[in-house]
Amino acid sequence: MIGDREVILFHDPRTLAHQPDADAAFLPGRLDRRVREILSGLGAKWSYPEHPGRLRAVLELLEREPVPGLRLAPGVAATRE
Image (cartoon, rainbow, N blue to C red):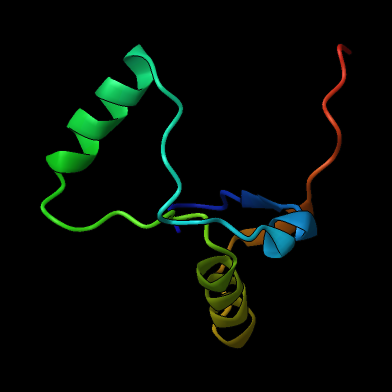
């Protein structure tokens, strides 16, 4: 950490219930084409980085090895305020 800064990692437990299908087709359209262009340039297979297994692994690592200045906080519903 630099100085006394604090970083908040917002987390919504509902993300752990997400069950992505890595083989599901993208929605058609220009966004699909652009996303495929970006993914093809990665040089590695992209398989949903938000997968609950990865999220769980990150959270467990942070519990075992806390990072100074990092604080976990629950996500809240978005409002217009």
